[in-house]
Each structure stands twice: as C-alpha cells, then as structure tokens.
Length: 344
Image (cartoon, rainbow, N blue to C red; front, side):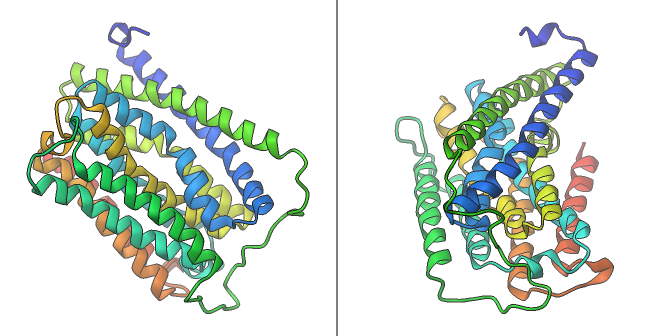
C-alpha cells in the first residue's frame, strides 16, 4: 500500500482500522488465555505474564522492528518503552473498575511481584548500554543479548516461583483466588484452542505493520517528533489489547491474569529493544538514540517501581477505592504527557 499517496483522512482511518483489528483480536485472546491457564494448570499469573503478555505485544514488536528496518531508531525505541508506560497506566484504570478492593491487594500472587522486579532489572539494561561504550557484535549491542538472556531466565524462574514459592501472600477476605473455571482433565479441543490463538497473533502482527507505516508517514509528512509519535500514538494504539484484556479479565474475576498480563506484557516489551537492535543495521541502536528518547523509559521505570511497591504493601483500599500505587501511576503518566506536550 503506497501510504505516501494517502490523504491525512485516509491515514487516520487506516490507523483506526488497524487499531480496531488489534482491539478485537485482543478481546478474543483474553478468554482463550484464561482457558489455557485452566487446562494447563500453569495459573493465570504465569499464562497472563508469558503467553498473553507476549501475544498482545506482537503488534507493538512489529511496529518497532519495522521502524528499525527503516532506520528510525527513536520511533522503534520510544514505541517499546512508551508502551510500557501506557500499559502500566491501564492497570490503574482496571483498579478503578474493580470496586470491591484495591486490585493489587485482591490479586495477590508472588509470580507478579517477581515479574515486576524482573521488569525493573530489564529496564536498567538499555540505560547501561546507552551510557557504556559504543560496541556491537554483527551490528548488535551486547546489551541486547543480555536482555534476551535475562528475560529467558526470568520466565523459567517465574514458573519455579509459582510452583515452589518461598514466600506467600497473606490471604484476606478481599483476596481473589486463582481457581480453574473448567475441568483441567478435559483436553478436548486443545489443538483448536492454540490454533485460534496463533491465527489471532498473526492478524495482530499484520495490523502492527500497518500502524508502523502510518506512523512513519505522519512523522515525515508533518515533521513530528519520532519519540512523541512512538510513545503517545503507536504505543497506545498497539497497547489497546492490554487495556481491553485487562478490563475484561477484571470483569471475569481473573485478577491474577489481569495483573500478570500487564506486567508480563511489559516484560516482553523490553525485548522490542533487542528486536529493534537486530533490525537496525547502522550499528548499535542504543547509540543512535538521543537523551530525550530515554524520557519514556525513565517514566516506565518510575511507574513500575510504584506498582511493585503497591504489590508488596497490598493496601486494602484508598481514596476512591483504589490504592496509593494506582494514584501514583496515573499521576506520573499524566505528568509525563504534560511534560511532552509542553516540550512540543
């Protein structure tokens, strides 16, 4: 599709249709992920953090890879880290929806706490790569390999934390348990379940490519900041599945799936940087960035830290029925948007 031949109206319509496609697929995948968690016995937190998190992040990863292949380092980077900030803010919105208690209190699960700490670690690696020497192995910075290694080790460790925890959250009357909705021994239709899940992932990937091409055209045509477009347009559009799946999971009572899906999706989103670095052929992508590109990484890191504190403190309720972490997360995100708007 010759995107440069499209009018502004058609570009925005194309962007909206791609976003709607991502949205519909994300809604369908939530129910499938919940059933997979029940049938495999792996639990909502782990399935939400790994399978659902990675699947709903596919469109975003396609955006970053496409931007990197086009030599747009800032757009590729800001799309990944901007998505982390946006998706963390979505979790605060889900807390507002869950009126019975603070979501982080009700969804007590050690695997989510572990993945939150893992995410903080992963977000520090790009900073180290940026501040360190400009080195590359076949055009890829060693930090990108470290990101992939730490993520893989973290996934294995998350499973061990769930199966043999050394710490357990204190149960209260407001704590929601992760209990299967169906008979785990019923394996009929499992293949079809995974096939449908895979097809939805493929469709989301194509939609992500369309979003990237529209973003490239808008950036060039109107001389927009690539960091701003990546963090506040492509990141939010491709993060719509996380918003819908999180709200849908809360409505279904699958609270561990809701929290795990956001944290796991954010953890997987750090791999956007590895994918982007491999796709960026002008050397290390970290040293093609400028200082302002790290604004949204720092924002996501601050929001994740507040979320992790909330998961540990487990405040039962706060102002408006939400915890201090949700107020802090929304406050940081809105402040960051205000700073970016002022910088324009």
